[in-house]
Image 1: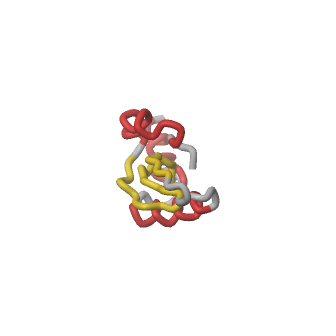
Image 2: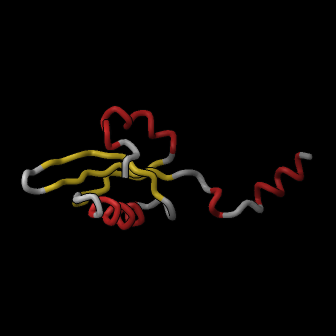
Length: 91
């Protein structure tokens, strides 16, 4: 049984990778508004991948991405939830 589970784990598709999240800063103009947020990222868990994903999501909602602060796994969500407020996993 243990061998079967090991084989299944090794053969799992790439989509079964650990979740990836990014924290970022964004702005709106006229009037100037800023926000800090956390978003889930699909694909490679890199700052470049997060930047590409977030730019489109944010601009579709009238925001401009200023920067991606970091990328992290699910273990970093709890410490960022209060800081992100209403922008926690919104985009």
